[in-house]
Image (cartoon, rainbow, N blue to C red; front, side, top):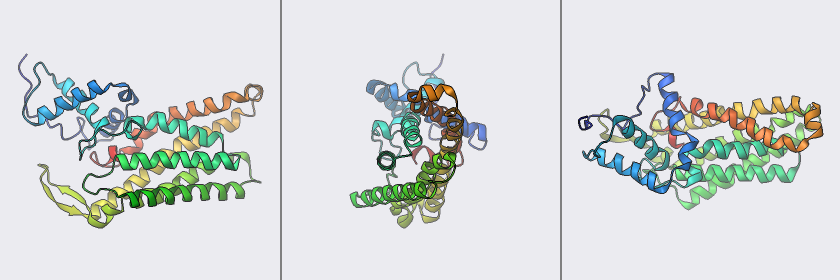
Length: 294
């Protein structure tokens, strides 16, 4: 077997991004939760393979499949602009396990004000970590911007949740179960634009087909942020709308009436099942470069 050629373009995804299937395969790979189980040594090995290949050095015995595997491991753990290792819970591979736990708890403990406030705060704290960890390397976020976005989103989410909770008090229980989704949608509309306001001011880098930087574009930044907000809300719909309907039906059955403690783990499991499929497919409208780090 000859040495691996140097003309494989690992700057771009492996699969054709002009097709839905190609984009879906790309994001299923990037968001694979199993990447969280990789050791620091394995991550560093993947980084070395990718960086060496980009520098024109092929690791002896390296196959094309191994190169692509290393590329996706590298993309799942390291920031694309700065090259820094992203904190564990801020990685895209952590989105499913983290969101299934937080979302499942928001949907389970929605009746009492203290638990509503607590889980909305936990959710916005997690979002702030993800947004900061995956910020654009060309538009650094200051401590003031981070604090403003965090406080604004948390306030918006809690105010929306408590306001709708009060308004839906006399409506069917299913309506009340959907209040957390409305709160999350409202917070996303606040959090992301505030967190990335510098990109709206100075723009984001624009490159040609060869990867040469042409300048900065505010229009591209607006489009990217709009896509991120839209995908975040769409991503939440299956996990925050389907489980409440199922749980509303199941809680009327004898099995949950006799074993109410099953409600929380069952809801978390349903949310996780939805997220496994909805997270990658809701990310595909974004560009290959933008969506993994939203």
